[in-house]
Structure formats: C-alpha cells, structure tokens
Length: 494
Image 1 (cartoon, rainbow, N blue to C red):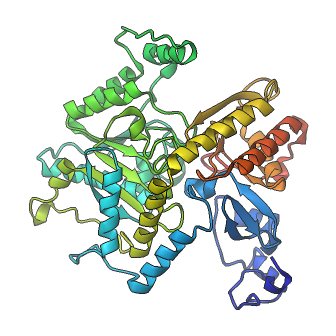
Image 2: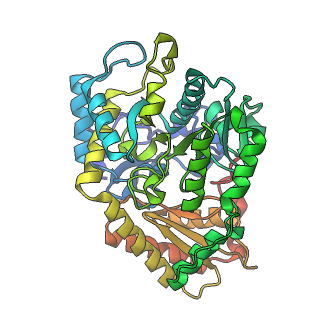
Image 3: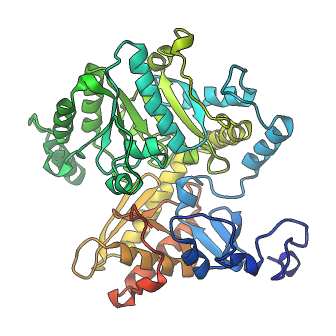
C-alpha cells in the first residue's frame, strides 16, 4: 500500500473515501462490534489489530493493511478455487447488479434470466441424469433443502413412512440445525442439542478389512490386478446397519464421495454397492459436493471419479469461486417430477435470497472459467507438483507420515516424536509459524490440508512447498506454547 492510501489511527476513511476498520479504538474487546469466528473474540482481538486485517487479494495471495503478503493455501475456506482479483467475475456481478440486483423466487414469479441461464449451464456440466437445479444461499442451506426434499419426495410417491435421513459417523454436512443433525459430528450434537428426530448414522466403511480395497492398494503399487472373490466388502457393514434401521423407514442416505476433512475418496465399489442398495429399497442417494465440487478432486465433480450418479447433489463454496454466496440442490427428473403433480405436492420451501441474481452471475462467469480455461486439469497438475515437491523436501524426515494427492487436494500426514499421528497442538503451532513466514495453511484432525486455488502458478507452488517443509523440518515439541495459539474449536479443526 502507498502512504496516501493508508489511514491514520483515528480516521474512518481512506484517502480515496472508502470506509475502513483501521481504528484502533474499535479493536477494544469491550466495544468491538463484529462477532465472528470460532474462537472467543477476546482471544481474536488480543492476537491481532487493524494492521493485520486482509485488505486485498491478488491471484493466490492475500495482502494485509501493512502490505504483508501471504499465499493462501486454504483457498479462503475451500471456495476461492480461481483465486482472487478475477476481473471477469467481478465485472459479471457488477453488470447484473446494475441491470437487476434482485428478483424473488420464493413465490410464483418468473426467475431472472441469469438464474435460468446458470441452471442450464450447471446441469449441462453435472453428471448425466442430473437435470434440474434449485438454488439456495449456502451449502448448509443446500443440505437442509435436500433433507426436506427427500422427505417430500417419499411422501409424494406414496411412501409416507420413509422419513429417516442417514449419514456416516463423523461426517459433516453443515451448520444449520437440520444440516448438523444430518452430519455425524457427535460433539456438535451434544453441544447444540437436542437434535431433531428422524436422523441416524451408520459406521464408516472399513477399508482396512475390505479385500477389494486391499486388492486395489496392491494393484496401485504393483500394477497387477488381483480381483477379490470375497463377498464381504467395506460396504457390507454399512448395508447391514441400514437394514437394521429398516429400509422401509429410510428417506435418504447422505455421503461425501470424497471426505473433505482428509481428501480420502470413498471406494468406487462402496459407492456402486450403496447406489444399488438405495435403488433397490427406494432410498434417495445424496452426494454432498459442497466441498468437492468444481475441480478440487481432479474432476469437475467427485461423482465422476466413481461413475456413480446420485439422485441429489448439493453444491456451494466454489460454485461462485468464492465471489458470492450461493448454494444449489441438483436432482434427477424422477425427483423433480414428484413435486410437479399438483399444488399440494409442490416443494414449498425457500429463502428470500435463493437464486440471487448477482450470485448467479458470479457462478455463471466462474463456470465459464472452469470450462474454457481447463481449470480442472490445471488444478491436478498443480496438486501433483505440490505433492512431489513436498515428498522431495521432507524425504527422510521422521515427521513425514505421507503425502497424499487427489487432484488439487494435497494431504500432508505428519507424525509426532513418538511416530504417532500429529496432534492438534502441533498443527496449530505449524499453522502459526507458516503464517509468520507468509503462508496460510489449514488442518483437520486427519491431516494438514493444502488446497490452494486451482490456478496457483508453479512459482507459488514451489514457495508453498519450500516454506512448509522448512517449518516442519525446524519443528520441535518443546517449541509449542499453547498459550499463544488459537484455541481448539468444537470440531477440533482449527
């Protein structure tokens, strides 16, 4: 930043007249007006002030009020897949805001043209069989809408007893109460409960005991295909649990085809068997692609990795590449048709900002970039370069458990001094050290999550790998001072 564009400690605007939060008095915990984040605000405000606020984005970088730059290897929160400062997306939003900034779609009016245009483009890009789309404003709202849609579908086709919604243990499907109940994060259920009725959770597929998963791992290493003839697979336990719940009571099963917290895909055969089970028992299969959609896993949508088409797909995050808030629920003709029978069968659920025209304009512009600039392939090449560089830089380090890559998702599994998976204090410490070195990373209980924009150029990838490797190699357990680190959250992620 130039001196002319910086503010004084007491000013309220920059030299060019823009509003600013650069007033030190406003960062007093007793009077600070903005409540955000997962950590107590007293901690947040005690760790940073107005000079530390992000004020600009440039490509894969964020810039703070002092002009310090940080490479964003977490893509905001997994949504900035195309990076910052895209003029084409910003211009599309500006043009739509000037022409028509809002039309309500929760009553009976026709939608604005850009919403129809984007719906058509989205279903054309989606897996074959997904033909209709209904927009929401967030991923959590998309999941909640899908829950209500599944129950409404079953009612409309005459299966009124099918009300229970099922997901995997430990899964996360959103932060509204319904989405939280759908997910299998037990600590959230305890903290924010009681949860609404009508939800159940089944064990994760046990890939360690699955002969097909072991055969695939052997094939991946040796190139020799040893197809298993064993009947029991990692999906057998899940199907047994679904039978115990009684398929006649089940409306839908929700899964992430790739687990967002780890980057580990559910096995193809598991998803195929689950698809067959759901079809046989009249259960809707829902893929939550809020995190995995739009190129993160090496395909436009993670459903393409297995070739399994669900009945319902949920999107958000990178749907607009982070430039606006938008979510979507995309469905097959069969699901859509169950709500187009009579006025009493209609899906009477919406929010006032669903299909917001400016957000749809951002999403349509982003989709054109994904398709016309071959961004998915760019992301996979970026992920491969990052994984290779980290493997080379950390080779021989006792801290390295594994470097895993799936498309533009790289998971760095680290070990403590005893050779056990790294704990959260170690990850929080590494995150803080990386921040000081000009790198923003993210982490979960499963892994250090590296998800930079798909468009991150090679020189930035090399900086990411070199900086992170240097921090990891310098780490000692005695360096951890938890009093200086951000507190753990309920989910333990940050």
